[in-house]
Amino acid sequence: MDSKVKQQQVQQTQQQEISNYRLLHVIGRGGFADVYLAEHSYLQTRVALKIFRTRPGDEQMERFLVQVRKLARLHHEHILPILSCDVRDGSPFLVLPYATGGTLRQRHPRGSQLPMEGVLMYLRQIAPALDAAHRAGQIHGDIKPENLLLGEQDKLLLSDFGLAPVVENMPGRTQAPVTGTVTYMAPEQLAGQLEAASDQYALAILVYEWLCGEPPFAGTYTEVATQHALIDPPSLRQRRPDLAPQVEQVLARALAKNPRERFSSVRAFASALEQANSAPVAINQAPKRGLSRRALLGGLVGAGGAAALGAAGLVWRVSSNPGQSALLPLYTYHGHTDKVYGLSWSPDSTRLASIDLSGTAQVWQAVAEGRTARGKLLTSRTISPAVTINDTGDATGLAWSPRTELIALGDNPGKILVWEGANQQNRCVLRDYSTLGACVAWSPDGTQLAAVYADTQNALSVAFWDIASGNRLTNLQFTGMIGISTTYTPTPVLIARSPDGKHIALSNGNNVIQIRALPGGQVLSTLHIGPNSLAWSPDSKYLAADNQVWDVANGRLQHTYSPQSQAVDWSPDGKYLATGGKDMRVSIWDTRSDKLVQTYQGHSAPINALRWSPDGSLIASASDDQTARIFTAQFA
Image (cartoon, rainbow, N blue to C red):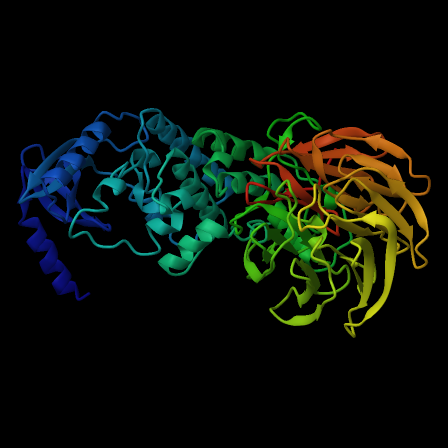
């Protein structure tokens, strides 16, 4: 702007008076008001006048004044007080103390990275102020650097407290830019359900921005809002590897999509962050593979360990009692609209495929890679799933090849869809397939696919298919294994092939499991149980069925774990067993001592499926609460 024009504007402003205040110059402009530095005509003291650009109607004015009266009674050393309120030409204005240090946006322009101690210094002032307001029933609703002011001796002051929800519907207001409010909005606030936890989320976004120089989400209003609702922030430690891993995990909890999964208060969040920052960083060395997926994983999961930390990194716990405190999820995927019953990891442990009872199968990013954020939906398919009497899907109806990008998906009408997880391309469709149970199993080398079907007498058989040609190779009849004549069975029809490829287990959904040797089909064991899940031990010697572990060679029960389990999986090294079920928790058992070593919480409904990532660093769970969750596989 030309200096003469600017000088003329200043002179025009200085000629204006409002009440007993002479306007000096503009010191700030927002979406609905202008802020002026003003001087009292008689006292010659300086204040800030916030003049709203709208002329509210009677009802809107009353709502505004009710809120202002509440804020005038809100006293805290780090909340900017309201000195007075008046109306000029139908537009309200507030008289506020003049914060000589400006805003935190001015102090730290966009792109600035703050040291952790600087961030904690701000939080020590912001957190108690927000908590005091929340106890008084007030929610800020617009936490951002522009609303954090610096007074004498850099004392931090929260401004615009609780005004945004009141003025947002006033006529004549200017729409705030995308880089403003929406950048810090919690998912529930975007849905019109503002609550105290929304301020915690906004503050966590601000902490993220302070630490890495930019907020986690960018784009148009709609793009940013969608990312808040569905996408997890990119790895913080990828940009700030100097931070303790626990710092990122604390932020992950404060940024949970579900407000009930966040900390109980803003002060609890600030205290956890301070404690996490002082936690020691593990230095156990692991083989490095350059800037690999594991390096990014370390930044993503915090305690899961970066390339320099390995799998022995620390885990942020709800309490400090190892082995007894329940850990919270690192990430919750909200992309489904029905109960999630099936999961399968990609061979490189970076992506997950999940399926729900509506028949929607989705492939999404489980570990951030480059510009691909965790939680991003990559591909999807819709099928007609087989469902049990108990409203459970066949957990083995979805299987990612252990060696390739191919995903097999069993469809109830009688076909298997094989498609590439990296894109939408169908590789082949295998038919001659039963409507009894949509269950499939890959060979260890990923060249063959086994699928269950029923003959005309309803006896069960397993067909083996060559994926390269799409041809059926052979059938293996399970003599005496009779299925149910309808789509519905008491428990899921399940199939599981051993890691060495020499055994196959089939559950008929009617309390019988038969284990056969391959390729001849010799019966090794028959178990009279009806599980909801099956999992082979990595050495192929044991079969886990829900909460029970069986010796395949002699058919004897080795151990029974959690009685409420209906989902099970082994760790890749065979040392641990993960179980989950109606208690809504994931329990980790040491298979050498049969002792419980860790529990995870976060689901609000029974768990249907568990899958350990191939690299052993993460555990995924699927639940009736329509979510899939990821936990750090880390035990003392």
